[in-house]
Amino acid sequence: MASNHTANYQLCQWQADDQVLRTDFNEDNAKIDSALKDLAAAQAEKADQTALDALAAEVAKKATTAALEALSKKLASMPCLVTGTYTGDGAESRLISLGFQPKALLVMREEGYSARPYTDDYYGGLALPGKPVCLQTSYGTDYILTIESKGFRVYYNNSRHTISNQKEANYYYLAWK
Image (cartoon, rainbow, N blue to C red):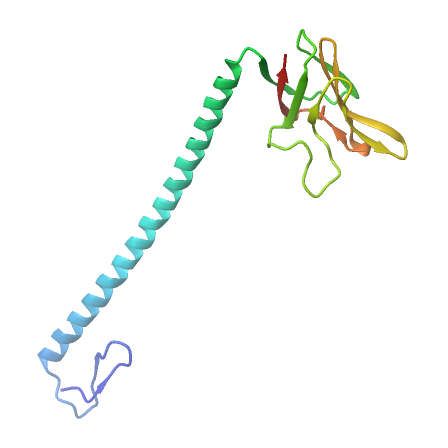
């Protein structure tokens, strides 16, 4: 019989003059088997949770996409609203033709903002006839969006932070007839 045992699992540790018993080995093997089983279960639970978290993220992403698509279809079916997208070409000024003068216009970047947080960059906003989206600076008026008789005009001047026509950037708009 062992005169000493390990600290964590109380496994047998024999001294030179201890009598070694088969039952000591059997008990130690049972303890090791139980500890390995618990470890395997904990690892499986952790792996299951990781897979579950990944699945939940994917479901949330698909739900958001489905909701946006449903909203887009609903808005498109409204006769007083026109929705659309354009990709900036980097020109200083560009007309986006709608075939009518909007009563109101909302333009946002693809990422969902009209001004980038923590910067002075402006990508869009809400414009009305005679009420453009613009910045009043010491240099004068810097236009971001203006409504025109057949659509709206977007602008690009990176150094002046007017970025509603940034090259290869995608924008979304809602125009009210």
